[in-house]
Image (cartoon, rainbow, N blue to C red; front, side):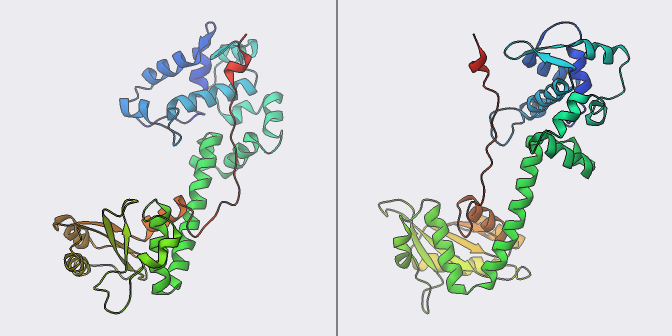
Length: 307
């Protein structure tokens, strides 16, 4: 089954604490068994790679129960049910979620406390749908993905609107930002696209000593102009003339299935980068874009409170 959202986990987490003090790690394991999660679901990591998605959602469920006064922290990684929590379990609802928790004044105060997680969840709850089931950090990641998707579209539009020469320069700048070819001072040396260039727009060192080189073909096409297999074969021929062993073919559009198949079958290593992948690489390496704002997410330091 799919990994349950954090609101679905609220009642099970509270029920796990019905007896006595419990350790959050044990609750995670028991609930993973109760929901019969697969090994893949149990080990699925957050983008940070520091915590599993399921454990993160269990922690958020426990945190929200705490905001409503249904559970309380006792010591590091441990919590217990409160008298209010026992009252809830005495007549257990079918589901505990944000709407249910909103009947408690402490939780209402938490939601309107400021511009933190409560506000993010309020917005998500009003939006409805699957977004309302996300944890606050998942909401931030989803928003970041939306912003990145919009930025990628804008980047491609600007690149397509530029000149072929600008696009060739952009590709080499991106490769330099990725660690190839030294520095931007090598830009003029790397760009060779001109009349009689032999079908190659740039050549860049793969290593600092220039022991191996990557030959580049850059095609600035509109979204409806797909790169076909013939263009890949022509580039292969150009690599042959330069006695090159590897090449990079970059386009602002897409590659046809036959083009990708041809690149795989040829004897030289040819890497294909289409428009969407190009935009993602530009964002990742801050080419054509810059950081506008940085949000810092902090977490409780358990070791600080250890006696």
